[in-house]
Image (cartoon, rainbow, N blue to C red; front, side):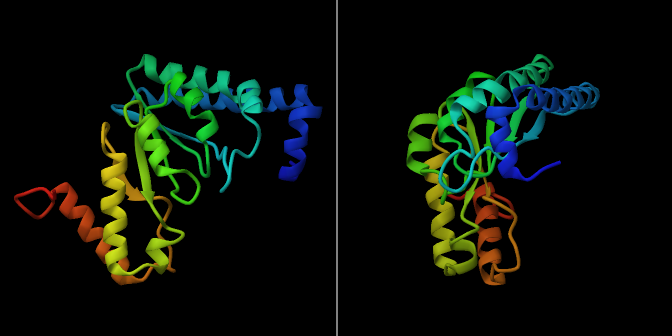
Length: 203
């Protein structure tokens, strides 16, 4: 094990060792996949944090050199068993979303509004994948008013739910910095959207 900065350097200086490590991780993931599809599940969840708040953690070329083919193999196995692919990656992954879609992505999480442009996501990808997340846990939930929380949710539903099955949720875990009033406002709005507890769904 070593510090993250050294791993970033190893992508350029230690190709053999990096490939050995990633092949080992893929072997484990493939074994998990073979076991997982024995169960009656509709979808699977994979995850790697490829992004940071501003951009990818490394270049698209590094993703394509080391990760793309490995994910294509893993996701290809799941898709051969008719499983939908949910993938978690924190941060801004805009530069590789086309790659992820090409190899089988169905749902991207967590869709951090502080990291990715929601309008661009919607305009370019809403007819190709579904979005899971989108409600700001950095800004609106901890620091906004009740009305701002409700508006945030409605704006994201309108933007991200145009063509596909948007899964409305916080962009990350809701932590103790979120006032209870905002949490309740979020929960109530989610229930309205889903139609839970009422005869008519929220418009």
